[in-house]
Image (cartoon, rainbow, N blue to C red; front, side):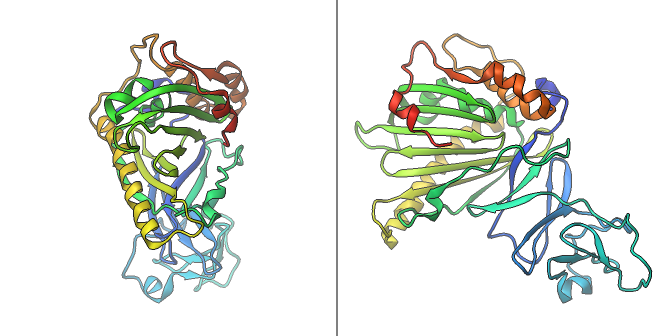
Length: 360
């Protein structure tokens, strides 16, 4: 299995950034046991509605907070307000990770009775965590998607795609991989370009498509990564749509992935038929993405790309991705080396109006 060090990405095993860890629908006041970044977590929704993510193990005797169904602590209700009780000895920890009650103890609570908590946000039917091995605060925001609140749009129902034994570098390469779009996806391109802007990587492309448009219609996509794990794509074709693909490292060389598609069928208030058609379009989008998924699941790692002049700028994409595996103080130098727009000689760049219209 390919590891981060095999790609020479940087000094950290796992990248810095915002990453999806759960759907909102899966989250209740019964804690979820999760593993990401080779670390075990407990995730739950407090009674106020607040989302809490903390390391999984009680500091008392190492009990996993979210892997018990038979303790009376769990049976009677493990979540109290926004706090959680350990199923073994009923120590209670607040959303700040500090122990705030030991039921059989009258003295002061030891300062060491605390659990690490992690920054989380809930948006667009997803739960995101901020991961940073340097322990810093977020240095960029989650993407802003006004479509989510707009009445004309049918919001996505997130597809859980499970785990993939592939280093995320192999997935990131797709953002610049112009040459796979015809063989894998049935695209007939009329323009293509990439742009890098700090923590954002962009792909703009347009042309025909065998399944997602009809006849001589053009499918245009404006696709971008916000940080290393959240990909979005505004699509025009049969419908206006917004595609959503996220991947999060589970361990070094394994990721978990999700997919969704928001659709604007055309009506101010979509009908049941519009919603049904939107769900079918999301399924078609998922199947298109799974074409990539199948390749990634069976290919050997490409530690070095046998780069052709006609290929997209893999080297720049890998430099861009490497910023998230290095101390954040290195980011400015990487941006200075990478930021800009890139084209390939055999394909026209995106029209200026397309480039100018992008909202990231």
